[in-house]
Image 1 (cartoon, rainbow, N blue to C red):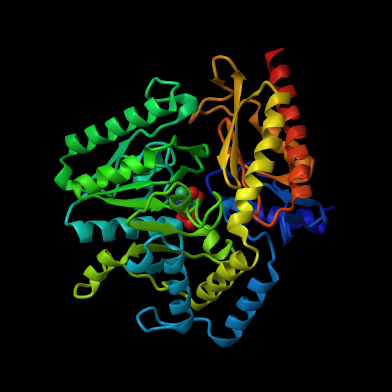
Image 2 (image 1 turned 60 degrees about the vertical axis):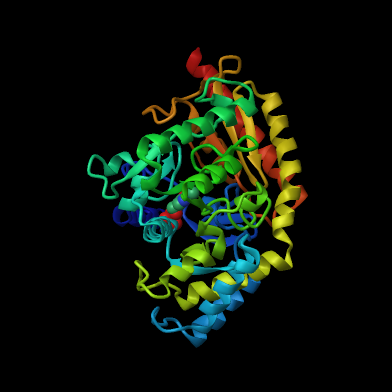
Length: 451
Ligand SMILES: Cc1ncc(COP(=O)(O)O)c(C=O)c1O
C-alpha cells in the first residue's frame, strides 16, 4: 500500500521536471517546512541547510519580520503596473542604491525576477551606454540558464545552448585559480599579473573600442568558490578604465552579506559600474533580481527608452520582501556577522581537511566556502574530473550529509558550504561535525572503490 508521503513523491516525480538532473531516479526528501537554518521533510526529519538553499536564504528560513511584511503587502496590493510608480518599489530601490558603492553619485535600480534576466539586462544596458557590442566573461563562471545568460556562462551549462548561442559578441577569458593555476604559477602575485596580462591581450585582440563590458563574479560561485588573489579585481577595474569598458559585477551569489560585506566588490575594495543581484535580496523568499547602475550611466536613459522590461519588474510582493529583508540584515548586523562566521567556519573546515586526505583545499570568504576533493593531495588530482561524466564516489558525500540530517550540494569534486548568516557558533560547530562525518563516508567510498 502506498502511504501518503510516498504518494506525494510519486506525484512529484510524475509531474515536476527538476532542474539540471536526469529525471528518472530522483529520490530527494519532500521538504514541507523551514525554520532558521533547518529544513523539515514530510516525515518530520530535520536537515541543516548547509547552502542557504541555493546560496539565497541568507536570513535562514521563516524570518518573522519578513513574513509579516509579506503578509501586509499581500493584504494591500499584489500587483502594480511596472510602468506606473509604486511606493514599495521606490523604497527598495533607494535602499539598494544606499548599499551600492557609488556614494554621493548614487545610482538606480531596475528589477527582474531572476539573476539570469538581470545579467541579460545589464549587458543590454552596457551596450546601450557604450555603443559597443562585445562582452568579456569568464570561463568557470555561471550567469544563468536563460538563452543570453547561458551564453555569458563559462562552463558546461552553456553547452546546452550551443552552437546557436543567441547573444553574439561574447568572448571568454581565464581567471586566476591559485589552487589550479591556468597560468602555471604557485605565486599568487604572479597569478594576478599573468591573469591580467591575459585579459589585456584578449581586449587588444578583440579591439578595445568594441568591448562594452567585462562581466565577472567577484568570487567565482557555483564553479568552486574561487577567491581571486589580491589585486586581480582592481586590475580589471584599471583595464576597464583604460579602455572605456564598463565593469559589471555579478553579485547574484556574493551579494547581501555572503562574503562578509554588502557586496563582493565592497569586500575586495573595487567599485563596479553595474551590479546584478538576486537570491539574497529577498533571502530567496520570493523571486527577485535586478540591475544596479551608477547614476552617470543611468542618466543616459532619461531621454532614450530603457531597452528592457518585464511584467513582474518591481512586483510589489517582491519589493516588500526586499525592503523587509534589507531591514533584517541591518537589524541583525548580518553582513558583519558573516565576517565573524568566516573565521570559525574556516577553522572548522580546516580541521576537516586535516583529518581527511581526500580534502585538497578549503577556500572561501565570509560565509561562503568550498571543500575541493582530490584523489592525491600531492598532485592535486581531482577526485572526479571537472565537467566529466562520472561522479565517482561523490554521491556518497551527499548521501552521508542527508543521513546525518543536512542538505548540501556541490559540483563535480567541490562541495559548497554557505549557511544562513543567522547561524550561531554552536550551529557552526554542529554543521562542521556533520560535514566531517560525511567526508569520512566519502573517503571510505573512495577507498572501497580503489580496493
Ligand atoms: C553568479 C550567478 N549569476 C546568476 C545566476 C542565475 O540566477 P537565477 O537562477 O536567479 O537566474 C546564478 C544562479 O545560481 C549565479 O550563481
